Image (cartoon, rainbow, N blue to C red; front, top):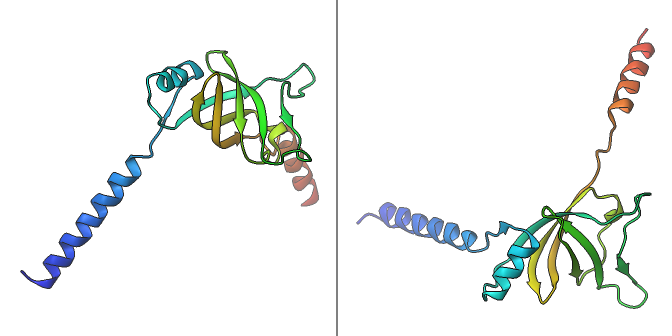
Length: 146
């Protein structure tokens, strides 16, 4: 065999190994009930749960606990999934910046007892620009060019 054939085979084997190793860490979007069922059956795979924060009428987050002076790496909050099930989420890292402004939250982790242990938190924050601000800017820009 030529050296180019051997190099080609090695490249193909490495590519297949990379693809197989990345598919092992693929997790799915589930509800808290499905995550609890998976944990009860002994599956320890990571899952994604999408939800919204429990807030009062004025927009303040309810049942959130973060005391950085006592433990800066312990943050808990209550999340409501798409089935309206409320569950306490435990995140053993500092509270993410602008957490209070988020509209939706995706937590990645697993259920343990009745709590969800999050390894990562992804947040969807509100749009930086509102439609009225954009229209106001367009009017101001067109008047400035006159």
